[in-house]
Amino acid sequence: MLAKYFQKRLWPEAGCDEAGRGCLAGPVFAAAVILPTKFKNEILTDSKRLNEKQRNELRSIIEREAVAYAVAAIDEQTIDQINILKAAIKAMHTALDQLKVRPAHIIVDGNKFINYGQIKHTCIVKGDAKFMSIAAASVLAKTYRDQWMMQLANDYPHYGFDKHKGYGTALHCDAIKKFGYTPVHRKSFVVKSLQQFSIPF
Image (cartoon, rainbow, N blue to C red; front, side, top):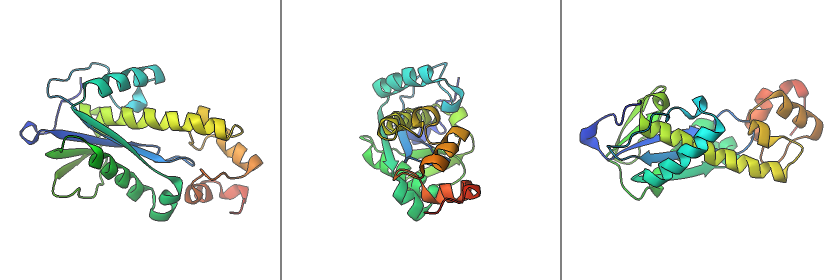
């Protein structure tokens, strides 16, 4: 079972993580979660290690039992304007803004973050596989983003967003080559990833 918190003396502690950072299309989502100090769950871990059914079941548990949680998204246009790292951090800050309980400490998956006001933070590489609140944030960010991409699959049925969720799979790349770009594609990402297609913007 993952650790419950990084520093109990700085509780309430919010865990933050993002989803969709490496995608060619769709927003980047981030979540912030404060869990009770007595929270227990044997399955909860990095969302990438879970199947879809487990993630959706955990989402219900997290939303029901969390002291506070929030999810935010930054759109494709902003990602292109400010870059994906800044957009992911902006999404985390927005999620933190929406928490109904103000944290005393923030733990973030990864090794980069920008100060959130005067609240202390700690970056933890692979934190979503070490701490429950970060893992919970990864589950929420992932499930909310997947839900968004499923809706985009209805809007753009030729691109298979329901299957690859915007990642640069062969199916996705072939669809871009055949049908061109959509308004939900990240231009900066696609240009770098698909230069061999010679598709101009």
